[in-house]
Image (cartoon, rainbow, N blue to C red):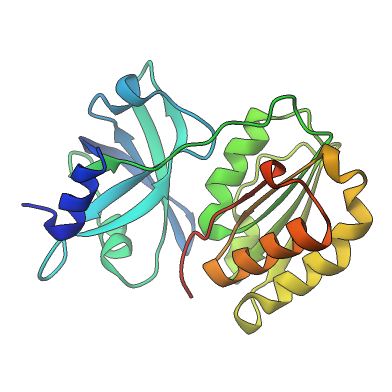
Length: 240
């Protein structure tokens, strides 16, 4: 089945398609399911980097739907990785609930690019939610010696159990229930970050929440706290 106009646009932007095959699945929480895949040769072609994501195509009633997902534990040698799916209503959630070994989907690689800060920052500040938790984990794994403060916005009570790859001696996690369409997270970061920041030149701030929250926090970090633009990475992961 074709991918419609979105697929045409991605092809024009040099997106590359790969078949993914399910090898297993497990529930991380009642609202999150991890699905394991063989990569169809993808990682050998693309390589890997922290926060790497792909667009995955899911069947819909009238046309395929694509959604972007971060790779969990990509292994180029074995040709495997996993992805974590929020189990809300929609094509992706429905597909993940019923995913069984041998099922296949297509992935398009286009747009994912990230270079870890070099030299390593003195301190990281990572701001996200359940959708960006896999990317946060990849950053903690890539820069394990860098002290980090993590704000994680939670939507469900079970989000408290989402696994974060923290080292208690170096990493602090602040969980914030989602309220007022993200306004509570913005308020808590605005209140706490100035006192934690230290020298803006030695900080690295990574933000990946809904688009509105991400824009507000990126603007605050760059304009009010004067963190240099190359040391602020902000990407809206979803639209409220």
